[in-house]
Image 1 (cartoon, rainbow, N blue to C red):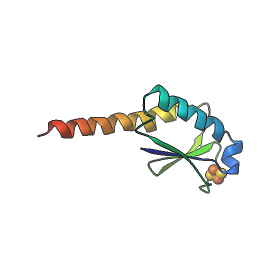
Image 2: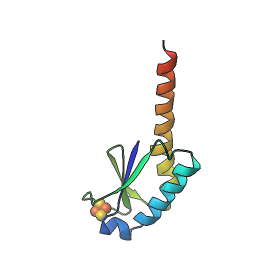
Image 3: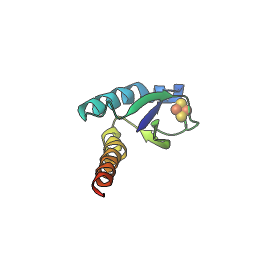
Length: 95
Ligand code: FES
């Protein structure tokens, strides 16, 4: 999985550094440091949104804030990771 957090000037002012920090902490807390690539991205042209823009495997999510970050992380990162692991497990037991 690849997570890209916009660190353009607008997202930066809307809390991108804090979202980066929260993402790092959640990845560490959930043991995902090795399976998730985290990086910054340039402006994606969605500066008119309320929160920070974050891409997960190329899917762009806007309006990420400190307040909704945990829900976002649970639904877009943890859920997807669990489904991917289940798919790998199922593939391994299909034979
Ligand atoms: S600065 Fe993040 S979308 Fe423009």
